[in-house]
Image 1: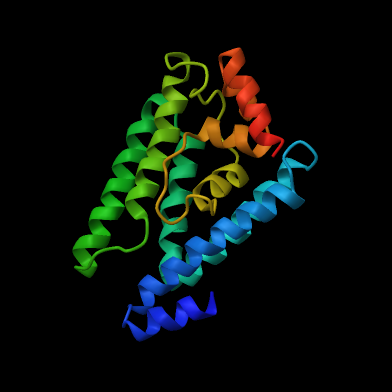
Image 2: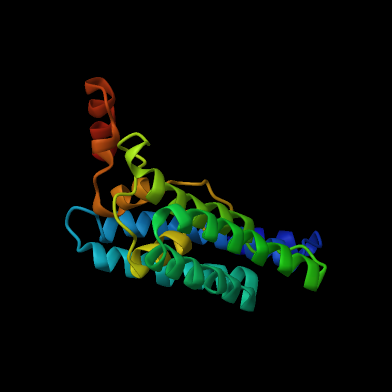
Amino acid sequence: MFLLIRYLLKTHIYTKKLNFFICQILSIVFGFLLRAYCPPRNTNTFKRHIIEISVGFTLIYLCYGSQVSHLLYQAIPSYLMMVLLPPHLAQYGVLLFTMAYLSGAHITRMLSTDLRNSVVDVTLSSIAFNLYDGDILKRGQKTAERPRLLHLLSYLLCYQNSMVGPFVFFSDYLCFIEGREEDQVTTEEDRDLFVSIQCL
C-alpha cells in the first residue's frame, strides 16, 4: 500500500483523488472487519448503526473535510419534515428542500460540490416517497414506519456506499443491518446459493 501511495504521489495525482482512493480502500477493509467482528445475527443492531455512523462520518470527513456538514444540513430538516408532516406532503417537501439546497450550494459557491449531495438528495427523497407509497410498492421496498434519526443517519453515512453509491433502498439497508438479507431472496435455489456464499 505504501509503495502504491508513493507511486501515486510521483505521478502527480491530486490530493483529493488520493484521499478518495484511500477512503475507498479503507471502506473495503472496514467491510471485512464489520462482517468478521460484528456479524448481524449475533450483534445488537444499535451497535451496527453506531459503527456505520462513526466509520462513515470519519471516511467522509477524511475525503471531503468540513463539507461533511452539508450532509447534516440536509438530513436534519428532511428528517423533521418526514416526522412532522403527513406522508403525502413530506414526500414533496423533502424533494423540494433537498433540490433547493443543492441548487443554492451550486449557485452561491459556483463550484462543483464534490461531496455526494446529489446522492443524498436521492436518498432522502426516496425515503420520503417510500413512506407515502408504502402500500403501493412491493413488499421489499416499502417503508412502513417513519425512520428513527439513528437509522436515517446510519443510512446516509454508511461507509459501504458513502462515497459513490450504489443507491440502496432504506428497507434493504435495514435488512442488511438486521441480518435479514436471505428474506429478500425469493426462489429456493437462490436462497441456497445465498446461504452457501455466506458460509465462505
